[in-house]
Image (tube, rainbow, N blue to C red; front, top):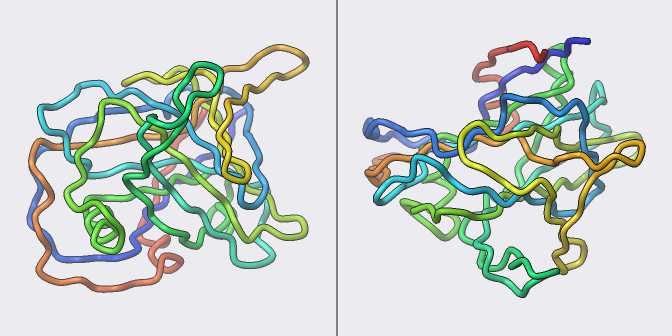
Length: 242
């Protein structure tokens, strides 16, 4: 059975900026859908530790995207997501270093159900160097230089009643690599989790892409604040999953 996936560009803050140097795809796990979705409750932070490929001398992140899922036609209330990047330098769990040092945080931003705009259950939220620079100004890390590996995490909040949100699983990554389990942070403690269907262990990987350049993002001359919800309507593209 084929399902539709719709791409949505989310622009939270839109500054004017110079054209960046040519981007390089550092990580891509959006090609092979694993035919299941992981659903998560409010406040549960889930993460995927990833290793970058095509590693540059001084890689500065210029864009990333991730795919999320919801079966709802509309959310009951305001649902948000929060994306974070961590170095894996925390206390070990079963011999593996947990996410520790936080080096990027979007902060909570409102998301809509894919069906709110298009007839599909999957959407891709894309962040460009514009968003990254603006987020960095508001957070912690302008001209963000990427490590060779780190944990990408997502936290959903605001789900109520019948609301559901989660992440579709993809494996294997076509650019870069990742473990086939995932990190879960419930109440401040990180642990590794796996997924099984009918007793069969399934590989887990989130639908993420990352782009970078050797040149840091130029400083914008103007910052213009816009609403995330309205910016979700900037554009879309679709593709079929086999």
